[in-house]
Structure formats: structure tokens, C-alpha cells
Length: 212
Ligand code: TMP
Ligand code: MG
Image (cartoon, rainbow, N blue to C red):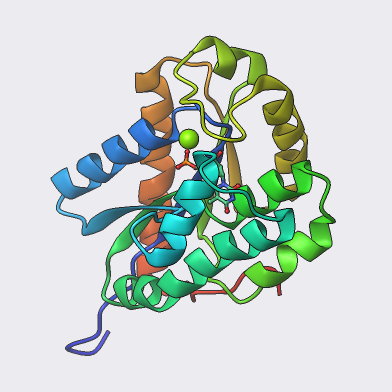
């Protein structure tokens, strides 16, 4: 483009059950991209650093109780408070690798029995990911990995329900990755698909919005 134009970064999201490997895979993906000289940052939701995030964190560690609708809206608010900085980063050419996003919001809350359309509504207008990796691992396998940290939701029976809800949310931006494969094999797939996506975004794919 013109002098001063900057091609945008890609919004890449990792989703999956607790213990599916999202955090370590996303960390590695960011290091890999940086190593190639691509501007990339690791983000995560919930972002526990904001005041909303601290309320969420206290709820997750069972230090406080909140109505299911209330906590759902707080998770969503935690994404809304980051929306403009995400957009700024993307427009400045930085690729964002995001550990959990709106799909977690809808899958976890609807697994509690909340109406799925009601759960999606507050996510409308957030930035749509260019690519979603779903790290697919049977709930039983995830539980076997151990290290459930004892936070709310980290129970096999609930994770089974979350997996069913995730299934309903799949769309064209999703790549289902077999998370039973060795770490290196999973990482290789993420790298190749992420690089393709970054190229597509650089060549002018517009940023779109969720669920419109
Ligand atoms: P974390 O373990 O990735 O920090 O996420 C904390 C928990 O919060 C995890 O069990 C998934 C859940 N969660 C929601 O219920 N709604 C959301 O919007 C997000 C981002 C996470
Ligand atoms: Mg966790």
C-alpha cells in the first residue's frame, strides 16, 4: 500500500476444555512467530488484571458467589474493556494469540443451563477471530492429565457439558486440532495454519465482528 500503510495483524484464538493445552501451545506459538520477526502478543481471557478480572478471579477460586447471569456478563465485560486496545494492536500490525475468548464465555455459561442465544448476545460486536483453534481432547483424557487446579468448573462432569456446548459453536473460522497428539505435532499444525491466516490478514482481509 501507500507509504505509512500497515497491513493488519491476525486475531487468532485458542479454545478447548481446561487442561487441553491451550496455554502452553499459545505461548509456544507466540515465541515461534516472534522468532520469524512477526509482531505477535499473547493475550488471555479472563484478563485477571483489571478490576472486573479480579472479581472474576475471586469467583473462579470460590471466594465469592455470583448469580450465573451476572458472572456471564462480567466475563463479557472483561472482553469489552479490552476491545479497543485489541483493535489498535491489530491495526498496528500486531498478531494477537488469544487464550480463550467469547466461545468459552458461551460454552461455560450455557453448560450451566443458561439459554445459548442469551449467552451470545453480549458478545455481539466484539472483534471476530480470523482463526479459532479448538484443541479437541475428550474430557476424560483432560481429567487424566491432572493438574485441575481446583477452580470452579474444573470437574469432569461439568467439562463434559462444556464440550457439548463448544460443539454447537463451531463455524467456518474453526480448525479442530486433535489435542491427543504429541505436543510437537499439535504445535506444527498451529504454526502452519497461523502463518496462512497472518498472510491472508496482511493482504487486506477486513476485521469483522462477532455474530452479526
Ligand atoms: P482459565 O483457566 O483459562 O484462566 O479460565 C478460567 C475459567 O473461566 C475456565 O474454567 C473457563 C472459564 N471461562 C468462562 O466461564 N467464561 C469466559 O468467558 C472465559 C474466558 C472463561
Ligand atoms: Mg483454568
